[in-house]
Image 1 (tube, rainbow, N blue to C red):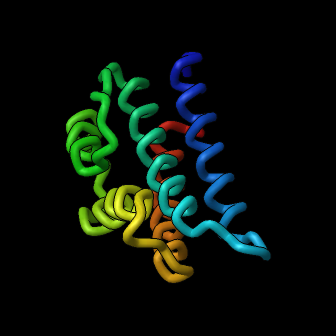
Image 2: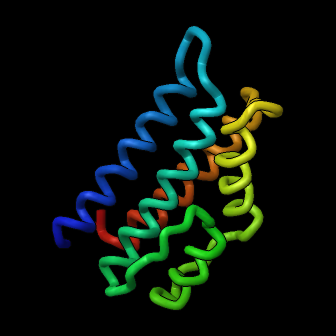
Image 3: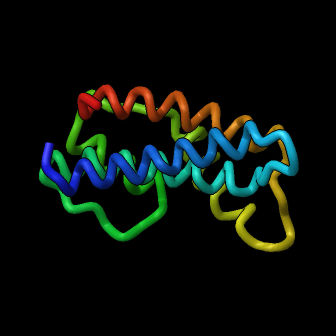
Amino acid sequence: MNAVVEEWLAKAEGDFATATREFAAAETPNYDAVCFHAQQCIEKHIKAILIARGVIPPKTHDLLELDKLLVAACPTWHWAVEELRLLSRAAVVFRYPGESAGHEEAAAALDVCTRIREKLRGLIGA
């Protein structure tokens, strides 16, 4: 594993730690941040795998677009589009005024993130 891939994975794990820590906060958890960092964790894991397989990922946050590239680079990969869409939506919608994530939305985002993260880490041997 090269240094660039390792750095992407380290940043992904930082996002996972932040999402997990914020979700567990006893006082005033920031559920919007949980959703954002859950999406970022998966985005960065996918980009790390793409780079490890010789694919330069585009500068996008769209998990559906990245998923298509991952399927092409790793034909054994498959994940439910609905769950990828949930993470992408949660990361965008709750970042701006007008909507806020609650406990339920944050729990769903973190659950999806945790399960996808586990499978992605298995693909890269992390």
